Image 1: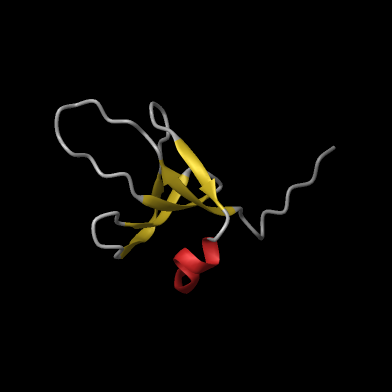
Image 2: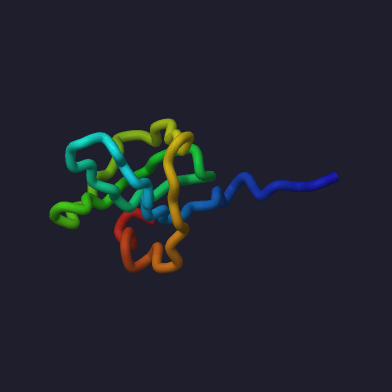
Length: 80
């Protein structure tokens, strides 16, 4: 039997690397997600501003590509 630590959810920063072939400019942001399915905040590519969600919202990765970033504290320290 496997025991999960529910008190400390896994929080990670994901850099979107999706190649958008749609004819217009789509920016790939850096996302702060909890347990890979709940968006907590994101950092805009255009100006670096961090946008915090009022409450975690569902985060879908289907059809998109991401790489995990190691410097979560540096990127989102104030939100952790």
